[in-house]
Image 1: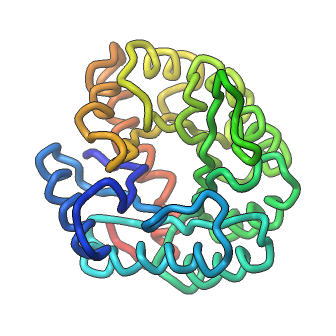
Image 2: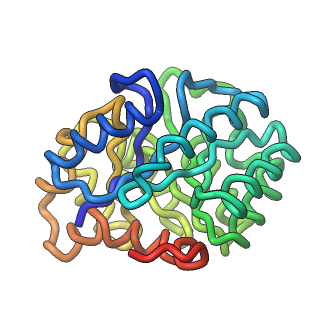
Length: 260
């Protein structure tokens, strides 16, 4: 069982969301990937206005229409627009088909404007995927680091938070979130470097690691290689490739009446 946490509708051919997800599913089938999670539409916007993130969420919902048995979606929000994001959370997650939240680079994760969104997401049992990075040249003004996410996790211990990309510099990212049991990491979006998964299992435990690809910006194969080739027990590999994500999503899927 392989469940991919981190997929986009960009980077793949297709005029419409339906065409793009069909192409992505076709490629995923070659790799034995059973379920995929999509967020953000096309074109992307780093600091989307409410009309823009609503448009992108509608694209994801359109893509899922014929693939609800294979794919899930997270709502893309912008905490700069706090009230509008809360309304979008209600529209797409509480009353719609989406099952999580995606935050990118508009606002750092330690910003208090995230608090109301995180509280409501936790009430809805919706996990929050927060992009994080540690650039040697310096992050973008609103781009989060794993340490920023750790601050948010300390304020909201009941929320399920995902440290996207493990900060890129995964050795520092793993250590930054290690004290916070409500933070998981994902393996997506970097080269298949030896040692990432092994260190994460050692420092966090296999239960806190989620496989993701960041396709179509990255290939399924290169990202699967990080987990498949890791020198870890087979039970740990099984959890990372799918069982953990199934566990994380199970409460909200059950609340929505989705049978797995």
